[in-house]
Amino acid sequence: MLGRLAVWLRLLGYDATCAPQLTGRALARHARHEGRVILTRDRRLLRELNLPPTLFIDSNDFRAQLRQVISTYTLQPLPRIFTRCSRCNEAVVAIDKEQVRDQVPTYVFSTQDHFVHCPRCRRIYWPATHAERVREELQRLGLNAA
Image: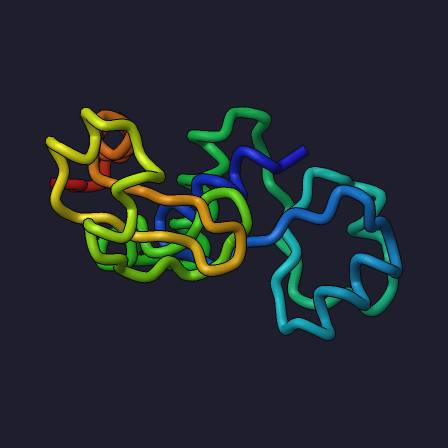
């Protein structure tokens, strides 16, 4: 339900997991155990007893969802942008260009100098058109993403 929001929070550098398989008390237990805030669109979940901190997300639109979370928790995402793996949520680390030679397309290798990788899922990232689109979207959201 909020998977796209979780990806965007990761892109902005925030530790965000998505556990659609967990519901009710199991979700509350998991969040409490990991010290997490629950973000939900499930009104029934709000009636659960003894929930950890929870935010009901008002909109189905991910842009409005992201604005709500940033506003509610006064997040400052720009200093953290692109510091987490958008797939598995692990913090990314810099990797030497030579180490990715055989793992990225030839054109990417010849045109990019900076690479990071996820130590968990081994995904490799570099600044390219995807990063530009994320920054453009953040500007549309009213965040200065230069």
